[in-house]
Length: 301
Image 1 (tube, one colour):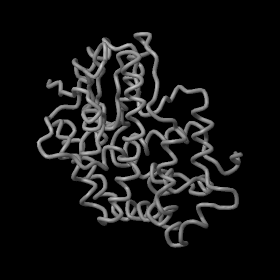
Image 2 (cartoon, one colour):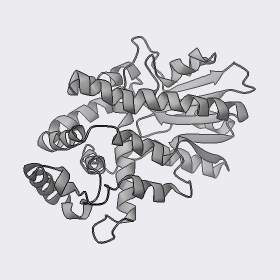
Image 3 (cartoon, helix red, strand yellow):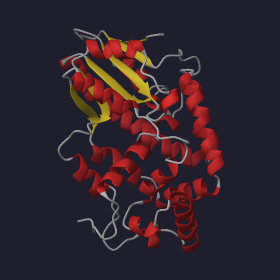
Image 4 (cartoon, one colour):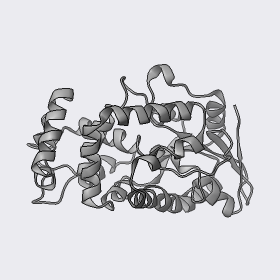
């Protein structure tokens, strides 16, 4: 049970989730050189009665940068349902989010972080966001990382997922997910504690560098350069840590998604929308589908 005395409000907790897991995935990919410049892909063949579609998102863009391309709107209209990474309409979504984001009983953030790290983070949140770190004392470090990631844009960012859900609902379509919120948050728990705290401290110490990296990623996304996006995170982490990060956040999740994608695409035409970083590479969703016998081709716009 989460203590209301120390926990952030539910709306803020939901906002932290959106910021963390709707910003991180595109940052951690290894692409294949020569990937066509496309964010929208058609999935057909291998017994599918009708094509399904895969759209790579960046999850958060400033309003002046945001648009839903006409081909994306058209293909969504042709499908019977929308699948995001997680079904955020699921009845148990908030309960699982709150449970998975909380530190085990008896452990607090002030105990997990070194005193100097706690002070650094507390001062940063107080000076930049007018937030008291004490209200997050029972939250896992990765949820605090989301507070820092929210500072990477100088605007109130718009989410592709949110807009796609609005379009799907307006068209009377069901919205589903390729994984549960519990599965998604469990991925972060697999990272060693020191990696989580190091990410926190590093981001606070060099926010300008983190912001510059994200803005560069936005430019690459707008250019539909999946291979370019793939190189950013590799340059910013020690090799062994990056390999572990990639294994946990991409490879394992991609492999877990494929049976779900196959099941839903066979049941009915589905429009899938996941972080762009999940698409490319030998263990990316597109290649894994090809290995299963599907025809996967880009829709160039």
